[in-house]
Figure 1: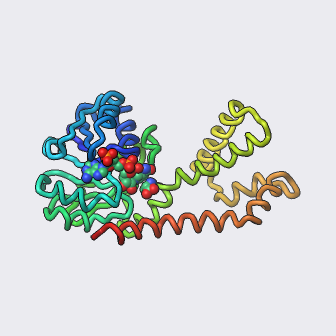
Figure 2: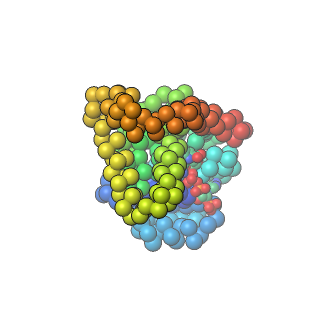
Figure 3: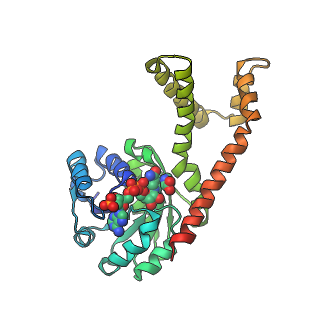
Length: 273
Ligand SMILES: NC(=O)C1=CN([C@@H]2O[C@H](COP(=O)(O)OP(=O)(O)OC[C@H]3O[C@@H](n4cnc5c(N)ncnc54)[C@H](OP(=O)(O)O)[C@@H]3O)[C@@H](O)[C@H]2O)C=CC1
Ligand SMILES: O=C(O)[C@@H]1CCC=N1
């Protein structure tokens, strides 16, 4: 792909995307430029690990690129756009990874007709398995969206959504890997409590998760039916599920996703000013 991509921000999400992009040949490493606020060591680390370009000069990084990926924290968006607004051209595309922050705010901050596309990847981008949602702003054409989807497909799947649904999909696909990891951490506690060998237990846990993902993907049955097929009356699974229900497990999960969604909206309220 003949695009040069600048990352403004070189933190964990930028690295997950860079790792995924450079692991396949869709975007050559030399067409990726990373810049950040001040952490020189971090840029050196990314350059040595992924053989990408780095540049501490944000203006140069932007000027040399067609696609500019905003990868700073939501709290830093105002300062970042104030700094870069004079350097952005209308032939470029701005891609924002920022939770909560709207395309409309970035467009108004930049004060140009440059297309702004909001995406929400997850850290599985590092192994090419992100589930990335994509939504366009006021100046975005179908061609812009297609280009950004192609770029993001180098790190996994892409799904076009309405911007009003982005907060909820941020919960369901951006943050949710952390919720799955949290459950696995609890299972690891059980492994330790029982004195089981983690080297035996971990591959079994991973294989089980892969099996669950595969069944969800291929089986015509709903998750509820799949669960029932495991749950013999009076059996082991039923005992475990009863315990989860007694702890209001499903309520906790729904509440967790609601709070995550609400936080995305709150970030917008707090930092779009
Ligand atoms: N982590 C995740 O799983 C996901 C994160 N996101 C989004 O990605 C964004 C980044 O998150 P994450 O990588 O975790 O954050 P990190 O804190 O790890 O990284 C933030 C980066 O932004 C840089 N930075 C801050 N201000 C500027 C600026 N004005 N110009 C250029 N760079 C700047 C920092 O540089 P320095 O170190 O020099 O200060 C740092 O490299 C967030 O907006 C988040 O909502 C989206 C999906 C998933
Ligand atoms: O926790 C966060 O705010 C970011 C956005 C989605 C995943 N991580």
